[in-house]
Every structure is written in C-alpha cells, then in structure tokens.
Length: 175
Image (cartoon, rainbow, N blue to C red):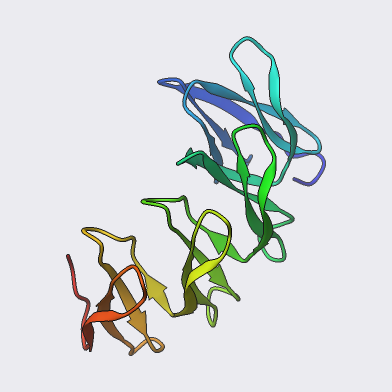
C-alpha cells in the first residue's frame, strides 16, 4: 500500500480481515490466526503473537487444503502463487489471478481480466487443465461449468481431465 494509507484490522469469529483504507477487502487469514501488518506486506501470526509467516505479501487468501494463494506486487502487475502453512513458497508467483484449492485443484488465470484465460492447476503448480476458458466455475460433483468464447460465448461442463461432458451451448448452464 502507498505510504499514508492506513490499514484497519478487524476480528470476527476468529477470522482476521484486513481492510484497505477505501474499504476494499485485502485478505482473509486462516481461522484462529491473526495478520501481522507492516509497511512491507502481509503475514500471519498465532494469537500468542508468535509470527509464523513474515509480512511479505501484498495480498493473501484463506488457507485451503494446506495452501494459500498470495500475491506479490500490485493489483495490476502483481502475480499470484501459493504458500504452505509455514510460509514457504510452494508454487511460484506466475498467475494473474488465483483461487483457493478445492478437491486438489485451483482455478488460475493467465492474462488480464478482459482477454485472459482460466485453467486449473494441481498442488505442484502443474496445469491439469490448460488456460483456455474465458470464465470458469469450481468443480461440483466432478464437473465444472466453463465458458468458451468472448461475451457471446457458450457454456459447457468439463470433467477433471478437461474433457467436455456437456458440449458448449448458448446460455449459462448450472449444476
């Protein structure tokens, strides 16, 4: 954050939420942990005050399946990667946006919000389903809704190997 902007730390039901001065959500930190805020970035510490992850990230998401997405850099040019609960970087920052792991896969985007493509990675950072979709949803019952094409694209369902189970069609398909 630029100098002069304040950060507000609010606790609710054991979850710490860091809010930027403009009220935008910056990060959620793992349940029962607090965020260590400094001029250099975000980290986590136990309620006892013991720092577990040194403040070093510009944004962070909840831990899920033992990993948390973290961003190094600003909203525009920063890259997302993943750390383990000890703070070790296990997937290098290389994605333009990333979501939490669910059932062993995380949704990631390569490229900007207008022309970027979405795909799915495993916990080693390897693409299981290459970035090829303009929009995606999480997997539910081993199927994910994906959009192929631009604004007027078509939606279909893929399985966890990336094969279409329901071919793309006009309109949004729901599970």
